[in-house]
Image (cartoon, rainbow, N blue to C red; front, side, top):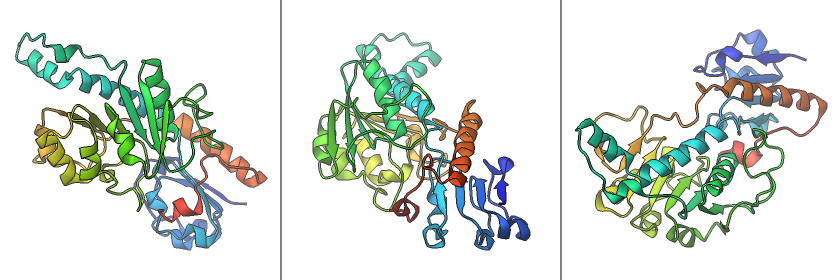
Length: 315
């Protein structure tokens, strides 16, 4: 049995493998498949080091009989902490306080003293990031609503950091299903997007959804920029359909300096670092997943984070 482990490529652009290795490899660990992936005729399992898996959509893995798993769980705690930090920062208008500091301006306005306790946070998608965000939010006294495509229940064979998240799916105060989006959105103080980008979810938040939110609500997007329709978001922020936004994922990378989001006083922008491979725990957690999955694969046992045929086809 031939395994291909590429630790140096876990955070690197794609490159070609030597043809003799590509032809014999049964297992591949990487961020992005090699440019000559079509030569990998013996490939049976691929483990990617990212949570997103759009890089696998066009590789015909289902048709080739190749199983795949992602690194779901490695960023749950980091992104959940970003979510909490952004809710507090938006709620207290930290951007204005920092500008006041830089201008030596003493302003004790009430908006700087807002508490998020008692607010309603809506989490759209309830995977690991959503579940860990729910756990932290409940500890801070927020009410948690979730919207999912499937029933909320036990997580199953998914990696998570011990002691985190909502393994049994019992934390949400209210649960909404697909088709109940407007009811879900209308009662929120914070909306957090926590779903993957697929053909079905691209642009899922547009004019209708943003107008359904209260004007005092905030949007947080640590998931993927194109989940939100760009022009709808800009219009909502300019015209006050919602109070503000915190965005870690964007419509272009890097976001051009002339983009209007940079100058909006009610927007916090971070450069896709809410959870990243530069974090202190990334490699340890990824290798926990990779080693477990390779052992399980060859023993014919269930894998952590295995992607379904539908997911691998981008649905």
